[in-house]
Image (cartoon, rainbow, N blue to C red; front, side, top):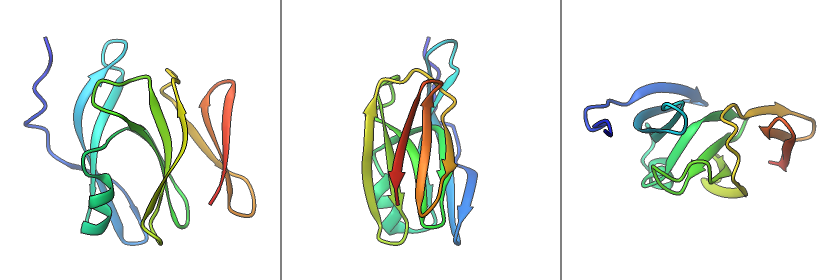
Length: 130
């Protein structure tokens, strides 16, 4: 039986350069609901337009100019997802890597000169220059 998520409320997630991110649970999937799927919104309408209609996982890694996110095609598309970068200065959304990683504990690491490494599984890292 699927849970009804309509009563879920947006909750604070993070703040980057006065942009406040909130998330709302819209689905739980995988093994006993371990993968959480969220809708995101901010306190800036032009950023909300980029996020509207998209679904995201727990992964949220902020940089000086933006944020890396794990985006799902829909509420039920796990493990298929896309690593994206939301540039908060230029208001662009870049799709970096589409994958089928069932690993739920993605991690970001700052390298040097605006370069980042995102671990999407124990054996796979993706590097991206911001």
